[in-house]
Length: 313
Image (cartoon, rainbow, N blue to C red):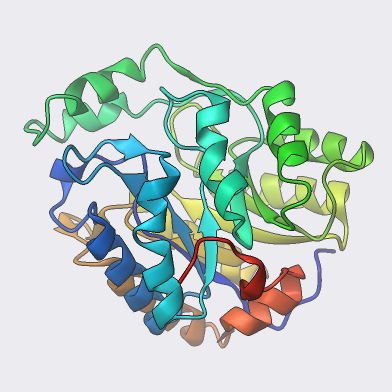
C-alpha cells in the first residue's frame, strides 16, 4: 500500500511551458502575476505550487534563474506554501539549461520527468486559430516531430547534480515505463523515498485517460513502491477534474492549475488558478476528505524546510 495519509496534498501548477499565453488571457506570464496567482492558489487551499517562468516580453518559456528570482521571494514573503520548481522547461532546452533554476535556487521540491516521450500538443491547433506571438504556432506544430528528451543519463545527471540540495523530486510519470525507471533509480540508491509520484494522464504520447489507465498506473506503483511513496495525479485539459476525483477517491493526491488545463468547464476558461483550487477543494470536501496544509505536506514528504531555500527574500 502507498504511504498512509489522512489528508490530501493539493498541488497547483501556475503557468507552464505547454500552453501559450494567447490561448487564455488568464494564464500568468509576468513575474508579478505569477507571484499573485501562486499566493492566491495557496490561500484557496493549495499546499504546493508548481512553477515555470516566462519571458515577460515574449511569453516564451524560460529557465533563466533570474526570472525565477523575480517572483519566488514575493511568494515566500506572503506564503508558507511549498514551492516546486520545474526541471522540465521546454522541448527546445538542453538538460543543463533546464536544471539551472533548481540547481541554483535549491527549492524544497522540483519536478523531474522520468522518461523520454513523444509529447504531442499540436492538436491544440484544431481549437486555437489566432496567437499573440510569432513563436507560438511553430512551437505547437513542432511538437509533431519533437521528442521530449529525458534519458537515463539526463535523469541521473539531474538527481546527482542536486544531491546536496536536499530537494525532494516530484517524479512525473507519463506512462507505466516511467514507474519502472523510477524503480531502477531507487534500486541504484540514486533516488530515495518517500517518493512523490505524479501520474500524468491524457497527453498525446503518454498514457490515456480511461479509468483502466488510472487503475493500472496505481496498481503498478503500489507493486513497485509499497509504502515508500505518495501518489498524485494530473489530468490534462478536460480530463483534469474527472481524473482528480477518481484518484482522490482511491486515496491519492491531486494536481490542478492553468498549466495543465485552461478550462473551468465545457467552453468556459478558468478565470484563475485559485478558481481551479477552490473547485477541487469543494470536490474533496464532498468526498469527506481533508486538505493537507503546507506544514503537513512538509512532514509527509520529509521536506528540508523553507530556511534551506536559496532564492532570497
